[in-house]
Length: 195
Image (cartoon, rainbow, N blue to C red; front, top):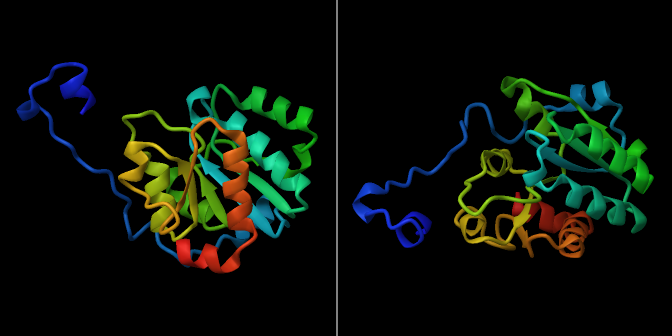
């Protein structure tokens, strides 16, 4: 729609190819205990993110929302899988929020290991997305039956039906992201249904 309406590309020159996850690699039931041990994850509720640590992924929002989740008394850990140019700033933000002991930065992980890391997550988040993206992280989270939280955007609504197979929240709204995470954390039956 953007290419046709905003860039005036002829519709016959546009092809949409949906992304997908490899169901042999990304599937429910993968054991992540070695990941828990390797990173000292003992929390009862693990919030996760996978990707390159860049500004447009919105990890600053996720850190703020996660901080509020801890203030609610949730025994949580934030597992950030990946590295990138924002890593130092995000670590500093975690320190400033006083949550550094509850945030695990794994560094770069080979894609072949990604399913093992995702399997540790009780909820997986895509905090921010561009309007044209079909984020692979969301599709891989969902393929593993991990409850997924993402911003309510038309392209994300192509992937997630709110309250059915994920939770959508108002983009750029830390309070709405916190509320979505708290909703999932507080309701085991909802977690199972979303998965």
